[in-house]
Image (tube, rainbow, N blue to C red; front, side):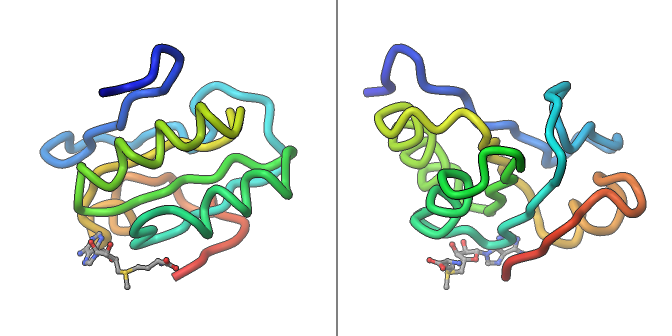
Length: 104
Ligand SMILES: C[S@@+](CC[C@H](N)C(=O)[O-])C[C@H]1O[C@@H](n2cnc3c(N)ncnc32)[C@H](O)[C@@H]1O
């Protein structure tokens, strides 16, 4: 069951548009964890870098909803989960020069 304050996953597959990598937030850096899996690394990066927004991207949606729940428990708010194909995200869904650090 999803937690009350947990975010929802951004389903980008099939949306052929460029996204705002900061999701309207006032962040200094954008960090992308491509193929984030269960999200342990993404959550730790977000926790240690409150000035950054961490994009936790994976093709498996069920993993991403668990990450959202863990983020809510940990009170991590600077993380967005993206359900996406890696090549779609890198190829055209992110604006040029929008990623400061890439984790694979
Ligand atoms: C080895 S696991 C990642 C482990 C994770 N980075 C960590 O440090 O715990 C690889 C992940 O990449 C995802 N993946 C594989 N192909 C993908 C693709 N084309 N687009 C997005 N994610 C993909 C898989 O669903 C899986 O969760």
